Length: 303
Picture 1: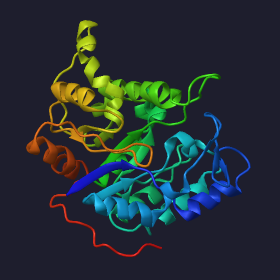
Picture 2: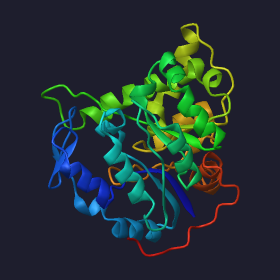
Picture 3: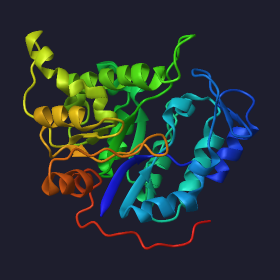
């Protein structure tokens, strides 16, 4: 039984809120307009909750944790309330096996509301990596991190808005800008994370942009690697066997968790044997999400 910690699924309220907007991000039909990346057409079937649930159930997925699409930049909008409320109303009605990460405004974070959402079923909080790209940024986020840590929930670090140069391929933002954000957030956490949030569990998507592989360079340039933190995880999204093998060589197997990034990518798992497969898809994500005895959600009809 598999636990996937990183997916995206837009519900009907969220979609309609995007369609009512006149400033980015907004939808016209299923064409998405943002302030940072080229417009593109969204596949509506990718955001059909029942279709997605059938895919996950067919794969034997026990839990799939979906989250807000941080590259849209919603967390920094002055008028984010409608979008955030719509997102949270939608995730409360997702069919099995979906659970969800909470989201919060970074301009005026409502910490009491965040606490309530974490107590009401959200598995943790997603934050955009570009908002945590310096040591000082982690310090600024401390009040939010404290709420999550007090709830004994984790934080998922996901790429945020990525201003994209003109005349570059469509893959530029995911391959260049997103990786840069995750790398910066990883090193900023390495510098001050445990001072700011001593008890927080953290997961960086996409292998933290492979930043851990550069720990040799860190040491060569006067930094200190130290011990692997058992509560700092990386997910497998968008990387294959070579990259994941390299991450395991640096961090060990115990902090690697399955994240597929569906519907934008499919899961990749290194061929390291049954024990490693069980660790990456069940044991490790259970520890990240604090599922002491993982049990499947009872299937039910969606909204």
